[in-house]
Image (cartoon, rainbow, N blue to C red):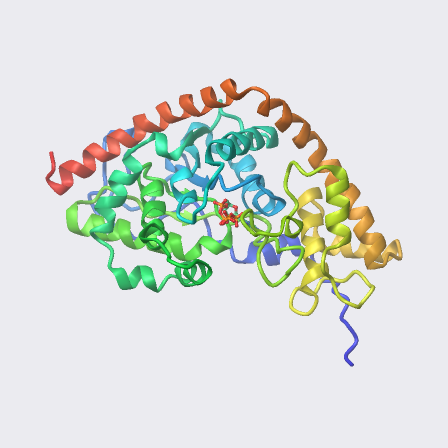
Length: 381
Ligand code: AQP
């Protein structure tokens, strides 16, 4: 039997592997001439280069349950960094229209409130970014309709998420097939250029680029191209099945650590996390996905790089069980203040609705201008 490899890369993995796939996020090429819109206060030069200050950021999260540490590491941490840089040029949407594509959604209203409370508790600042509920801005579905007339059915059917998701439900809805068009509309409605999402969204960002190119070609040059901004951690895996990603809607709650889990629940879930029969703590995602996932969770919670985590565990002579116990403490140290703040926000429903309403007004002001342009280009006004 081959000896399991201890991975001690020369450089910190966090600075190499996780960043290797990143492309420059600032310059946007590929749009030809006359790309200028005076509306939305955004004018792009015909030289096709965007300066940094012209970027607009859009991202969304579904109110399908309490966010978990995968949402935190794969998206929220990234948003916290970007919000300081882009401020009101950054929109974060609670995408409730997406969340009804897979029924049943029995607690949607409560989920919207809980998610808002969690985002605020994590440090999302509604005075910096535009935080809003998607369905409060009806232009999302309006633009999605226009875009759906530019998108072929086979193109949607080729998307890996459609194939994956339709296999899990008995009678997949039309909404489940067409939601990537709505996602493209979410991004394009604000002429967003940067989209911080997890790697699972790559194909949808490509579709968005296709649709903005198709609109620009068919109706007039108004939409910029957009780029993904991947987070430090590409994917946190399920604690029960490291072959799949950690997910809010996975039936077994032991597969994920939710941001509001009690310290006891965190300890129990980590203790029961599926690993393997090797006791050493090594990072080898292909051959040891379970323990490697724990190390990635550790990196998400601490800002430590993977090399340092593995080395520290080696120096402490830890085995998987003792490492799990220390990791639970680390996770609880990070999540406890978030949980306390979120519980406080949850007690103030009125404030949460107010935050979303103010955000919706700001989003609406931008969306309205884009839709006016769209309607004029298409010939509707
Ligand atoms: N396991 C994950 N690891 C890293 N990033 C993740 N994201 C989700 N799961 C992981 C990123 O979180 C952002 C918001 O995701 P979402 O709620 O809009 O939808 P999702 O990707 O489908 O997330 P879930 O938790 O799996 O929700 P359900 O179960 O409702 O489908 C996205 O940027 C996503 O990449």
